[in-house]
Length: 337
Image 1 (cartoon, rainbow, N blue to C red):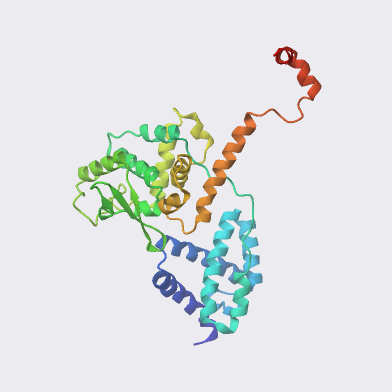
Image 2 (cartoon, rainbow, N blue to C red):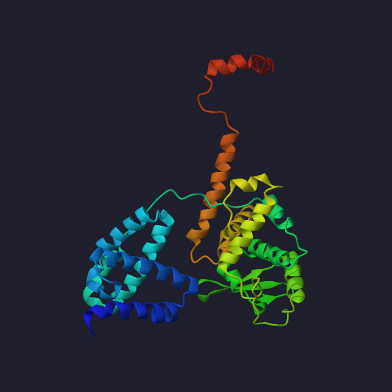
């Protein structure tokens, strides 16, 4: 095999064999890796003044990756989260190359060692219970789309499912016998079983029965207006639309950036505040490690800190003499006891 063709061969094997078969990652994850690698190769081609088909493994090193990250931050105005997502995708590819191209493993290891960019991590946005109720209750369930959206939002809140997990939900993944349970196919094709509240189970059962798919195990639960399985973008649109409709009766919604993932954060926070163990929340959401779930504790503690601060006097506002003078009557009363 010619040296200049090695790169294209490894890219094909990375997607067809390593990601899809060996790692078993989801289609959405594969698309993320694809987009990152495509952007990187376009950058290298422009930098080296050659077509992408002429790029070789010799053109890839840590310096080129760092230059790429700086460029997309400048030209595409990518935020830290996006930059780290691109870097993680590239690291995964070069980790694969280490096992395939031993002679250049040192170069690939330097790429893998590039640190992610640190920045202030914003607190996760979540909804209060009355806000969830406002969004769901304003849905007009007289039309077909309203009936579907009502079930989708109830499921998002009950299960904390990722958007892609809800898009891929099939009738066979739902058990209505007591206790009702929904089986989610998560990242890496890992299964997790989430209990359904009776209210959620009832509306889901009625929805499937009305759409004549209750006895069709392989049928997708949610379809778009064209009769195709609903997409991630479709659910995002539904959430934005329903939140917009609810702002007239719940003004606090206008101050929040709300998407499908907000419902995932919301159920996690409500469970935490109700005293549910962190390990249970981890398994409920399908987190790989407990550190990810621990972020909800940080939010809860920050909220409590702010609440305490709002009830406390500003430090240094009064000296002791002034405080006593302003409360002379109270002090006199205390001294008389």
